[in-house]
Amino acid sequence: MRKTKIVCTLGPSTDQPGILRQLLENGMNVARFNFSHGDYAEHKGRLDQLRALSKELDVSIPAMLDTKGPEIRLGEFENGKEQLTAGQKFILTSRNVKGTKEISSITYKDLPHDVSVGGRIMLDDGLISLRIESITDTDIVCTVENDGVIKTKKGVNVPGVHLSMPYMSQRDSNDILFGIEQGYDLISASFTRSAQDIMDIRHLLDEHNANIRIIAKIENQEGIDNIDEILSVADGIMVARGDMGVEIDYAEIPSIQKHLIDHAMQMGKICITATQMLDSMIVNPRPTRAEITDVANAIYDGTGA
Image (cartoon, rainbow, N blue to C red; front, top):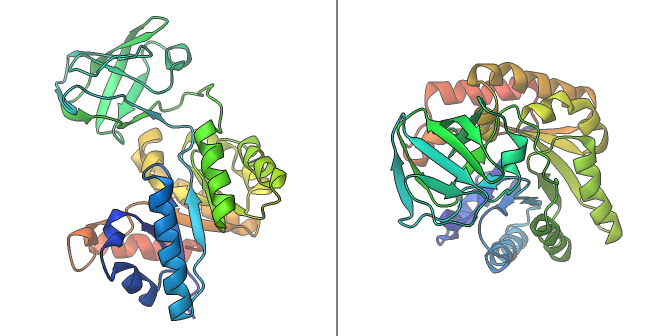
């Protein structure tokens, strides 16, 4: 019996005929639904298909609702995308403007009050770095540190900064209520920072008499620092190496991964290790040696999935 489980994300690429069946027949144990993208009709269609195929193949596959979480994104760009050049000035603003080469709106309107001059802001999973030069009530004036292309709705990360934004947005609440209605088995709570974040979700579940397990996604320094209190109230954790690699120095991720898995094991909680597992196989038939070693090391460390 294979003890380490496989979590697969369902999305547009798995909507192609026969793909979901192949996933089920080749060892998928959990189906993840990313609620940062898609609408309820799409998610329901995939969930219905999953349940029908699971019944046909006589397998039990839990469905995981992955919340959007308290993330920050760029607004809309006039041309969809823009090329930024190292050394140029670029403004992030709480004002509602169409994005250009010089300025973009942001979804979190209080960001100018949370950051400081000299700090760094990362765009699009860290592909573009901005250094903060000055701040007003509405604008953050930055210097671009490297060339790159920015696009509509790309992510914004502020490493090492405590954001005062509430953990659970109205959108997340609505998504969780949809998950309760549809009978999801797991909730993956994005950007968990503290035990209170998990308790907010659990309170919503209790109000609706829903028994859904909560997996805390650890993606930033706050989550790492508060891992013991988070594990005390969550059913498990996910070592979410994607945003973690933007918030924290890449070189620290291997030791942090081991630290988090070890804490989860000591407390008898579920642990999932995620992001870029066998990433090259999106385009290649076989994984790299480094990817094989990565998967093996996570298993040797004790990850459950």
